[in-house]
Image (cartoon, rainbow, N blue to C red; front, side, top):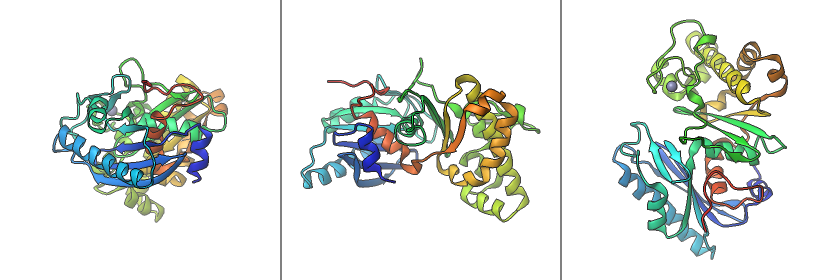
Length: 325
Ligand SMILES: [Zn+2]
């Protein structure tokens, strides 16, 4: 992936530190002149409380800053794509699951700004990935509306309109994992982490995979390729759920493109025929003809690139993160 070229094309000129703060791993990168020039990674102490997570995040950022200084790169800002429900304007974690104990209420931007002495922009990881996908990936060729679905432990996502990701009235825009797709699938709807039944996340996520088959998605997709019945059925049901969710998205937004990312998107060749068929069956013909379903082009770095974009002034307009003097 020629990231230097694509980030430059998006107008990225500043040097920034980018963090993808997930429930299991914190990934960081130094972004200089549009290229990811150094990487760091630390484990997320998600069950040890917010201050332990902040310590780990700052440790990762400090290591990157030391590496920047060694090569005489002056860092201008920090961008953080974090798990949990994030208010990008206030820079606060509005809500979070139990995988990140005490994360709710954390003043993420203020704390990192205080400890690092640099301007910080924060965004939800799914929305950051959508921002990157819209500007640098599947939406980069003139898509006005680009929707991203990230199929990971849970299912997140984001909606980007004209290269700007929307966060919504309560910072919840892009919670696409909780679209109810049970109407497209026979049998009793499985329960979701949110407490309701029939959400996309309850059918097609690493969480659902572990619960249903006591295995990781990678193993399940491999078994399905060998034709093992239970695994094949799980993949096909998940693909149907995905296609039905895309139909809901298309009916609301009729986006140019819906990009499928996250770890489970590695199984896209197996998912895509059934997902496309379910999309076709559940969506109005005009939306099927105009909304494309594609695999994410940025892969595992989408949130990290999105974090870098959040911290970088953009000639196309502001990101959802407030740019402060
Ligand atoms: Zn749900």
